[in-house]
Image (cartoon, rainbow, N blue to C red; front, side, top):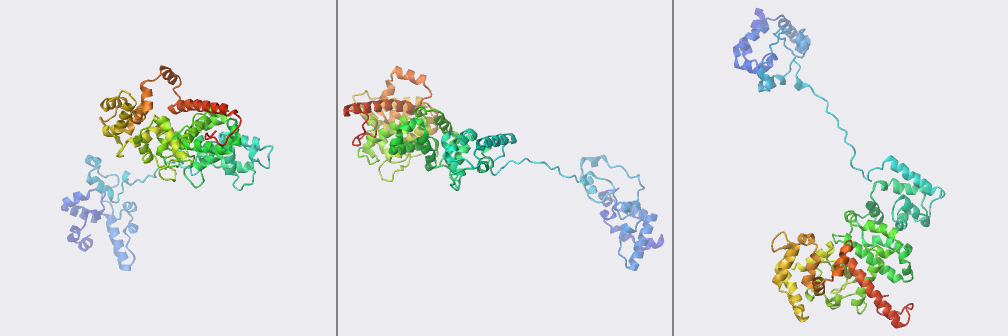
Length: 543
């Protein structure tokens, strides 16, 4: 092929890039390292019959002006595999790869990156495996199981069977109690939540739309109560949200039937219950009771107990009428001018002057809790409820937090010996005035440290106070002399009573004692007035 060799000079061969030769059988790196090998290979390639036909076809196409397409014009089997240049190795005679290429050397990777007649695993693109993730977020709550839903619909049909036109409010109580499993006194507010247009009748479809389609079936009881009580546009409960169920309790509970003739005290009872609920349950103290706080409390259990127990006084948590009676009478005794406000001089008389002036000053400084009273320097009834519950139940979490903040003069979250000594100094002076043997503060401090066992020596934190069961006694040592002395000389009979009823709190025992005392005083006053059945409005006592 002298004409072909003249057409292609050796300088053109030297200008070839190894990758442009498209020789899958040889590495481009080997060709670069040995240019003479490239020349020999090129000369051998020119002598191949397929090469001669390819070059002639390309020259012919160039003369006629046709587009050049080496692949289409080549009859080589190698060209059909995607390589425009015929292979110089016979089919099936490809040299085996070096074992070093298996280790993933750059030589092997670069070789596989170009077009190749060999099948490479790197070029195989596998379809990604689609993993089905189950739905985990439900805007209106998780859907109930079919069995639960069908059972509820069956019960609904039974209750609405004889009331095709719907149920009135007085007929709806069985639905709230039997189907919804709510306390019966929730029937009125639930009825109003469903009857948004105040028609006075709830149909079967309306109830299903609200209760079943509203996903109440998958909610726990606390969430159901929370959702029913709160306003639709709020994410919390306020004191006003509890008033509807308190009105229903006062109207229907047999243990409060005697109050129906005295609307004023019905209102005071409802207020007191609500204040107690927020004192113990609303731990953030914001006046906005959250679902999380509701679930952490025992309020739902107390509501069910109210619904099941005919004697309201056996429901010690929140709803006891006797507890309300004690709180209200204590407030009435201190509020001498009956303007429903208490000042420092009134509060200092609490518990037969049990508290020190310094601690009363701290209470009125409102560092522990801001007063809801709008009169400066005055404590209202709500503020007094918080105070008396904290004072008579110092070992409860709200009580510990209340008094800890009062003792913490600098507000740094730590009680130091200087702060405790500041309050104990007045106690020491009162002991001397009462001819009691004074106990030096150094001895008292050692006793307090032993009772608390703080994590950091010499510093008492709120966490330390909550860990010990003697937090209430520590506070009494510092500012309540009467209880301090009573604890040091406790009656063995009272100690045995406490052990027999460990579920009773300090507040429960105090309220029980005070109710007996107050009722005896009322009985004696009735006898002195000549009749226990005549209500004399001129009397200062509230009952």
